[in-house]
Image (cartoon, rainbow over the protein chains, first blue to last red):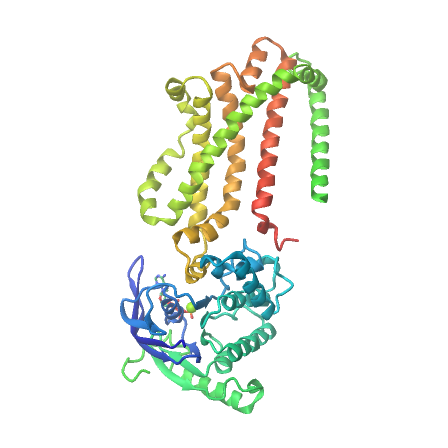
Length: 266
Length: 251
Ligand SMILES: Nc1ncnc2c1ncn2[C@@H]1O[C@H](COP(=O)(O)OP(=O)(O)OP(=O)(O)O)[C@@H](O)[C@H]1O
Ligand SMILES: [Mg+2]
């Protein structure tokens, strides 16, 4: 199973003018099959954390261990879904969905079958030969998801995957994400700016400090994933609580106030 | 299918207009140096076998040059665009030599390579090479980070990033450079053939001009124009096939 252990991970970007410390000894442990939402002020290092977990950004200190192996390069069963879905405009839906398998040198028959299945699963069975430009925003996001499914990913890293979508499409896809998580039991890490989305899709909600990012607090959300959770009083109460918490801690507008002292974090 | 028909109709209309304009101009100017289209076309028909072989010589030269220029310029440009360190070394060289009009090297090439095909092909491919190189480099640099990241997150190595992202992303722009440099290529072809050697349409046109055979001269000009159109259409068709996605989502 896929557990993730992040142990005082630091990332420093070498900038043009000066170096930017994006993550500062961040600790976080995810159980296998857990769904976690990450929320925090803009520029606090959420995307950096995902990239580091995906093996695309090197650590300047600490370690990230996934499923018992230290992350040094892209891992076979980790899927990264970016805000613009990372689709290639020059490939049709089938080839976009099959891209991960193609890169991993799977035989053509095999990857076509698995990509087709994945596309059917996200409701794109009739759009195999459409290019991304011919799909709606929601359909493109489904396609990004299909690529992860075709890979049989056991760790899904999502960076604000739904933020470009309108409210209705967004809820629709949140339901799809939840359903897939319930069916497949993959470990899921979702970066979001939406409090409702964090409460709907995170069994635990990680709140990060302003840059350099650390874990500020972890909010438990035990009823996440129950049927009809979105419509319950408890859901609203949980959202209100999280909103109040973020405001109190200055995390929401954290970019404007000085970074809180690092002691007592996490 | 209807697009093809529309294209054919477009060409037919343009040709008709050109012929009318030409005829009118030749009546107005009333100089033997500008014969009407009927004289030129009848000469074209009369000399068709000779013209065909000269066109073949020219077509071979320009095609070989364009292919050579792309085969070297495109991969090199893409590689430079994606490799900042190599780019830091080579970009200044490229930008220093890019603005130099390459035709000035014709005399040098004639001395080094002789007056046959080699010097002409070298000159034209040099021009195509630079144009494609600069365009491919810029296109490769402009590729969105997200496209590269998403493919790398799937485990792609450098070569796979090239194949799945860099090449297809830059292809439309390389085609644009190709179309522009084809025009230049034909102009330089004419120039180099008229300056040296005794074959090709450029030579044919200048030779007819020297013999004051203006009808034949215009027959050669028509052949040269046709050569350009065929080349252009071929590139267009190739792009339509290879860059089908650029038409997706447009209404
Ligand atoms: N490639 C890079 N080079 C230099 N600095 C970078 C780079 N990428 C990010 N940074 C810096 O690192 C910090 C964290 O960036 P990151 O993208 O991880 O933030 P984020 O939390 O995802 O923000 P947002 O919520 O706005 O997406 C920022 O201050 C940013 O300026
Ligand atoms: Mg981000």
